[in-house]
Length: 111
Length: 113
Image (tube, rainbow over all chains, first blue to last red; front, side, top):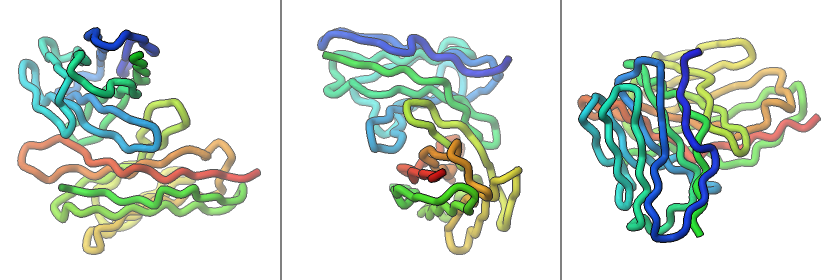
C-alpha cells in the first residue's frame, strides 16, 4: 500500500536534547512538508521541499532543521534552540495538483 | 499574509441533517481548494478537492466553489455521528512555483444522535 509513515508515534525528551522525527513516503511525490499543530491551532508550516537536495523555510523554521537526501525521506530535527517543542508534528507529501496527504503524526513531549 | 478563515464552531447538527461548513480565502490567484477531516488526536485526511467554480459531489459530500466571492463550502448530507470531527479548509498559494497550501484553523462539527 502507498502511503506516508512517521515514526515514532510518541516521543519523550528532556529539555536541551535534539531529536529527529522520521518521515518516509512511497507515493513517488516530489514535494514534502513538515507542519506543527498545537491544541486549538491550525497547521503551521515548518519546512518544505519540492525536490531532492533542496528545501525552504516555512513560517516557523527557527529551532528546526531538515534534510532531503532521498525522494522518499524528509527527516525533521527539533533542536534545543526550539523554545516550545512540545506539539503534534505532521509530515505530508503532495501531488502535482497540490493535494497533500498526511502521515499519522508524531506527538513530541519535551519536559 | 495569505489567510483562510473558517468559523471555529462548534457546529452542532442532528443526525440525518445537512451540515454546512464555510471558508473564505484572501489569495485571489488561488486555483485549488481542499477539505480535510481531522478526528481528535489523528492526522488530517483529504476528503474533497475542487478546482473550478460550481459544485462537486462525492457521496454524501458536496464542495461548492465561488472564486469571485473567494468562498468555498462543504455540505454533508445525512450527517452521521461518525462525521463528528474538525474540518479544515485549505487553499493553494498562488506564488510562482509554490506547492504550499494555507490551512484554516478548522470548524469543529458535532453530529448529535
